Length: 272
Image: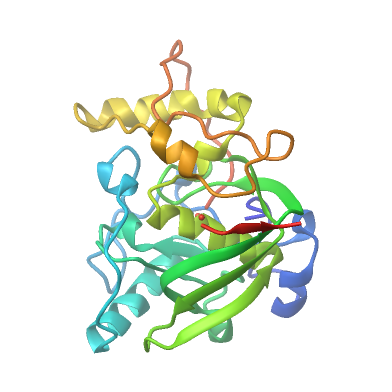
């Protein structure tokens, strides 16, 4: 599971130019098609469903992928298909209730651009740039249009992971692709995009989170512990990165949830 706003990826520029464009100009398909950013109730060719906050599975940290077999590759392909149907650009294992450390993404959001599809297993972000970009992010697991907000991410990162065949990969990502990777990496660390919101953005989406919590019933309160907050990786500087906010913030007076918005999608050392 950004500029997370904006236009549709099916419009517009060639994909390579798209990925190199300034964030505010980039075209993406990050939000679900249904009203309010809801996901389809059922996906074609799949029994998978996208898990929504506040289900506890979204706070899980998962076991490593060990078997890079046909079953795993088929599952990755199925998740990629579900991601496209939900109008996303990334989807993590925790979002479909799978206890393995992997995610899939295509930063163009364009099903026809198979050359941009990436399967990431057992990843690690081992270097973050000090330079950051702040942009709108939403998530397919939290009403992407209604629960979007501004998140600061490193402009580039160095990552290592295994692909669908188990081959080791090591590369530098930048721009929008770096943002997608960081968002999805957060998912398999049990961190959600709104944990990184400013207090103002968190307060704005709280009525929708309260509504989802009420609909879920008892046992659905999910807090980001102090230990987890302390473990969040760079860029977490007071001047550039909003602090993580408790996922179960005190309830405010109920307001009518927003009906429009945008949609959507951790260690290492900081490069100076």
